[in-house]
Length: 396
Ligand SMILES: C[S@@+](CC[C@H](N)C(=O)[O-])C[C@H]1O[C@@H](n2cnc3c(N)ncnc32)[C@H](O)[C@@H]1O
Image (cartoon, rainbow, N blue to C red):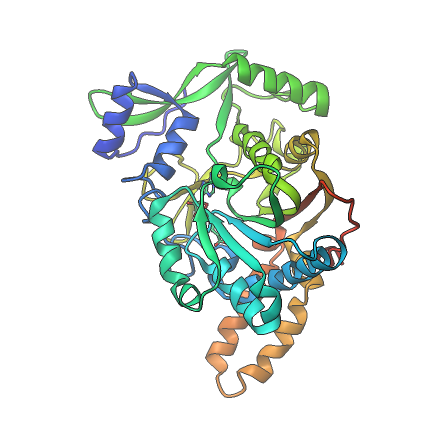
């Protein structure tokens, strides 16, 4: 049994004791991120940006949203021209964080395509009320301008009725995952238990459910993913992304004609499920520091894991999505004009060297190949009415 003791808040201790003293890692991750009162995102205490706990591409500056804005604008124009001249188009953002992406995107479209913007609704799908409040504050000026922005649950989007673009930037990495662990020659579901005397949490094991067992078998027969990998040592652990398929399925049902852009940390299966990657990819972030102890400061920091490239594509394609392409963030942003923005800084900040340097640093971080620049962009589409040959500038 692997044990990483940590101090624990009463709310979580009570919750775990009420559930019998042991919960799955999936439940643990869900509680510490999404509990409406105490969860990191649920309560709204998540702080994004250079002065927060961690940066997202959109929280550093408007550059990221402006560059994606070009792609969104281009896709919307193609939708209007080729297929849906009279249909209302929409842009959905999943997991809006502090509202930076949506704010940047609308700013870009206001400057570049005011007429196009009039015919588009913007929807944020955000289950965490604490974050919705932050998003509403950030987008207040646009709401006052009469821009059509709304907050919805996915279940409120009518089936087979959505036409437009869906974007999920750094969201799927926050979906709760199961963790599978190899112990004494068998696979277990990782669990979190409480030591009743000290009220400390420790990592524990519970039996694999039949559903998990089936999905591991399926991954082996369909994609050749072997869990545990050959040569795995005692305690080898990995993440298993059980919510991606459910999420994609719910989305697929609602899209009539649409493009889905998912951006996130992701590893190929051959790097993810190897004996050398013996503790998966799960980490926590607080005050810009990354930690490997997944039980540290529950509810006060972000908890995140990489996606697996092949399982995500397989889930999407099995449902009927068509894969348009996959690329690295650095390459996508260069194709969308990041270098031109970099040159433009000199002109824009002629008299203001310190701000010019800050902007330059933020832009370079977006393409840094050992960090955010290595994020993967997955583009999928589904067209019910007419097959469209959509052109995507992000693929160069
Ligand atoms: C790291 S932030 C992403 C920030 C944002 N997309 C950006 O570009 O800055 C993760 C966001 O996903 C939200 N989230 C978590 N689970 C979600 C789910 N199942 N559906 C939609 N959003 C979710 C969190 O509340 C949070 O707002």
